[in-house]
Length: 285
Image 1: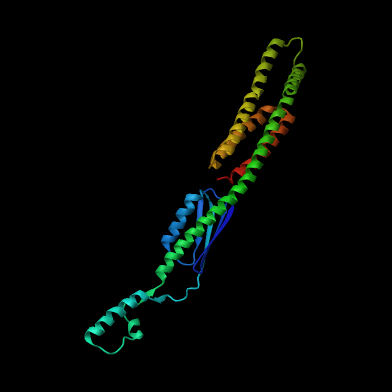
Image 2: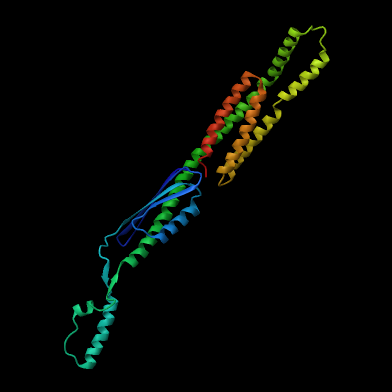
């Protein structure tokens, strides 16, 4: 299903914004755009997306806004440690000169890179913003899903209405076929010499072949099952597609056996609504 979700987290003047966009796709296709290359973070994002979004062409965009400029910062704790040790040595040795700040700044470990700490913070904020964005997308999808469900169920109701309308033409259809066959029989054979009993037997057999009762019952059963599935189950996209295929088979058989223009029109209307349902179910996860 299509969808959009955004999440934003701010901490200590550092802000991470995550946007997720999804288009319809049979499989999960994920693309990411991050401020920096981090294979482990990309893997964490992929795992989170896979866990929450079953399919779709998903695009994740991460933006990082931070006032941090310098890569190196003084390690004040290390400087204090050096100062205490040097001060103790100076007193023991009776050295009168004072310890200079410039000397402390040149000692090992006094300068530390901020990149590691920033990377940890960045990862933490990204995952929080990502979860917020996913949650918003799922809400967005849920709203779209309600609209989709309402439209699909409405079209199921239309197919049912067309199916019920078939009954009004069934009796007339058989009468028309009987009269047409009798007329053809009278045209080619002497009516007095015709075996009317045999004619009635053949007519009954022909009518049985044209009977659409089973197709009507099966189609209604599929509609009921379709409605129950969409209203009560999750992750139903593929299952609904299978049910619509079965509905299509019954509608096609009904049309091939109809032998009546009025019923054929109803069949065409049913097919039209079923195609629209198929288009919609393709968007359901």
